Length: 198
Image (tube, rainbow, N blue to C red; front, side, top):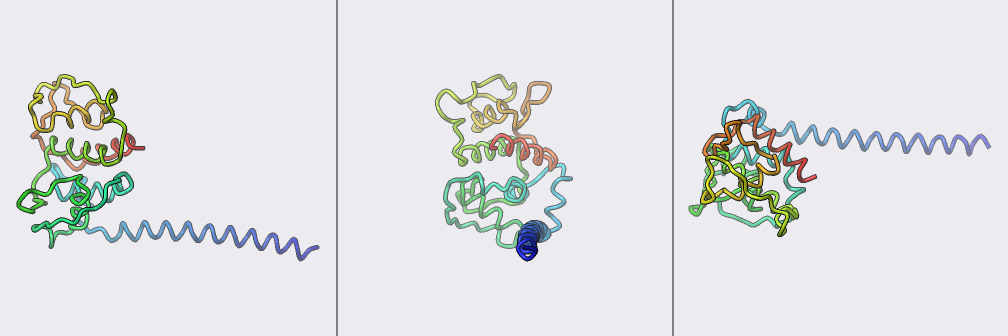
């Protein structure tokens, strides 16, 4: 009888140990992935204005955008990212259509990201996620933003992200589409987008 009891306790102890071991492996795997990121990545949050490459890195590493995108990765020719620390992230966001590659096959990784660009990227992610927000009747009604006319190429994207409170309109009623996006603002947008998609 005491043997069976010890066997049950032994089995429970083994299962508990195995579960803890798996949890530890998962945690260390996340740490290892994080440790692989270069120093430049950790400096993004403090930047007064971020680049297209830095936005790609945030989308892949913070938002974990791959879990929301249902589209297949398309092979693309991109001529200006081969030596960049975020080349893999740029290939992913470009290949899924979240961020554009220009007709001359450049990504322009060092170009500063504008608020209009950011609104378009967020909208592309929402579309790629299969969200019902684009179904007829579920789209937000356009509302007044002082400095964005209905002719602006990012008008629909700006209306969506402001109506869903993923990006904010300033107190004076402007969106400032040509304004730059700071690292802190980018992280705030990504957190809000993650909550929206969840």
